[in-house]
Length: 183
Image (tube, rainbow, N blue to C red; front, side):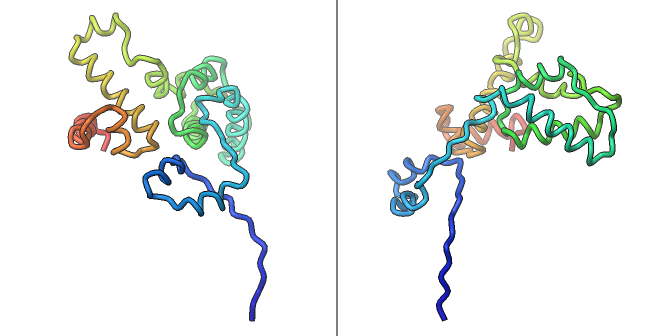
């Protein structure tokens, strides 16, 4: 007995399939079967105007789940969230908001509830005044760690790709991951 089925396939990837085709690691015919209506969703760091709406949605969701009645978000907290690069995209924002709602000690989420993001949100890990206070070696290590984290983010966690982005041999990259506790 034969059954006819009409289906649609929705597929997502964080890889560049064209590059994989060129390298012989993805079938070209499959690519064209899947690539009928491409939908590209930019990362959250490129659409920060979505953060307030997503924040409102997640706060309502977790407020309801946790049985909290009143919970608002301060302007300072929103500024911290808007200034962060969100390497984990919307899922990271959701997790950060959930953690803040769970741990909130008052009826308002403040910048302090998102303090872990502030250190990561600046373009440089340290200012010139910080370099003078801590010394060049420590400042360079902080900068190196941020560069490694950003390379990992850009390569979606792919260590070999991140090493290549930084121009490092894989063995040297793994040494640095271990050095900074990023393994």
